[in-house]
Amino acid sequence: MTISTISTTPIEGQKPGTSGLRKKTRVFMQPHYLENFVQSIIDAIGGVKGKTLVLGGDGRFFNDRAAQVILRMCAAQGAKKVIVGTGAILSTPAASNLIRQRGADGGFIMSASHNPGGESEDFGLKFNGANGGPAPEGVTDKIFARTKELTEYRIMESQDVDLSQPGRATLGEMEIEIVDPVTDYAALMETLFDFDAIRALLADGFRLSFDAMHAVTGPYAREILENRLGAKSGSVVNAKPLPDFGGGHPDPNPVWAHELMEVMTGPDAPDFGAASDGDGDRNMIVGRGAYVTPSDSLAVLAANAHLAPGYAKGLAGVARSMPTSRAADLVAEKAGIGSYETPTGWKFFGNLLDAGKATLCGEESAGTGSDHVREKDGLWAVLLWLNILAAKKQSVQDIMDAHWAEYGRNYYSRHDYEAVPTDDANALVDRLRGMLGELPGQEFAGLTVENADDFAYLDPVDGSTSKNQGIRIAFTDGSRIVMRLSGTGTEGATLRVYLERYQPADGELSLPVEDALAPVVQAAEEIAHIREYTGRDKPDVTT
Ligand code: VG1
Ligand code: CO
Image (tube, rainbow, N blue to C red; front, side, top):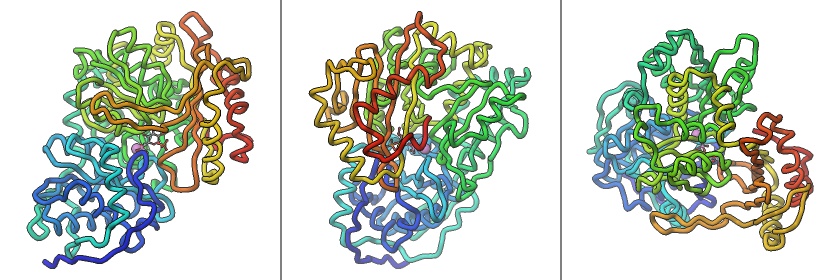
């Protein structure tokens, strides 16, 4: 088969963000765009000659075409083997698991995750290393540098490889193994959780609803929740993955998963509701009439993980991204285990997990996971919750109430201002950076600033530092505001404002969240002049 070397020129803006490169699908479909980025990844990791790689994606529009290009480029550059999910489908945690289980050298994951999909929406690509986790910053910096100097790429000329069934194929010298996307992942889950206990809970009349949001988790959830655990058929809804996710926004939060929220607050609400995102790494947990914030969920999972067989010996430590509420820290403190605060994005947890410093990790954006893979894992979180519910025989609301009564409550909300002109968003952040030194001691909306900084992370494992990771403003009463710009958007800038207020165990534990956070919201406005800079009266999305 012919291997072609194609001349190209650098394409601007191919800078991986919080989780890989995300752009409008039509941008990715432009001539050379995908090829340039794939070649830059291959060059940045020292080539793929003789290597084994994993390939899969969340099935969004262009997933199938991009997979064929990546296969032909790997074949052209001497890769030994590519393990690919049937139909080029793999959820992000399943891809991470395959890389680890097969001892592969890394993998390409085609996804823009929680971003909408379709020809007019978003596509994305990222590279994960041999540990199964997203390439760390050192590698993504190299990839970006390579995109700026690229002059050619190499690709094999060939017909499409048939990926429609599990089996084997070759492309030139390169082996291709096509695997069922669900099998290995489901087997891993069986090693971590007490499937018998969950089965008994469900047999006892416990009802659940899982919303796959027309995205990749449909087949995984059907197999695990319905087939293996015996949840009633139909418990998994929107289970058929679609290239445009049915026109929806596959981000599991009360705004985008409102269909599930309506069910869970309705008259015949099941006991437990959950949803996942485009690529299956996020989770939303909701009890009957009881939404659990992701930050609280991380804390509850940390406090109760020992009830699941995979975590029976306890946790080494818990890590959370900086904007995530400090609820998990309180659990770690009481348990006398390590707690870590990292920048936003799963790539920063990899070293802590590899070094055995953290067992559980989580983010306020509905990502939770553990050392079983090196990605956050939506269904894993759902199963850990079910395992805890089966062991404790309490409702979700009861579990939350008991948790707050023991540790206190971190009221929490995130306000997103989307598609703000980039210059305006940068101006807001620059102004804040310039005033950090003057903030301590000043009072806003009755709250006194204790300290303020621009978060910098020193990785305790490899000693690397990551600066400018978000503005933190802490108040003397334990409240906190974090502000940062999103690194996953594809249009203008998204300002995220994270709001937190702590009430101790003997404080007010059942206030409406908006009431509890009202002074913090007002302080954020007084400090950052959000309305003026964004031109908006209120956030576009509140979660
Ligand atoms: C967002 C979230 C972050 C998450 C990232 C990828 O990033 O805030 O917590 O890790 O998405 O999640 P940003 O930079 O837009 O705030 V996913 O499920 O889209 O891979
Ligand atoms: Co995701």
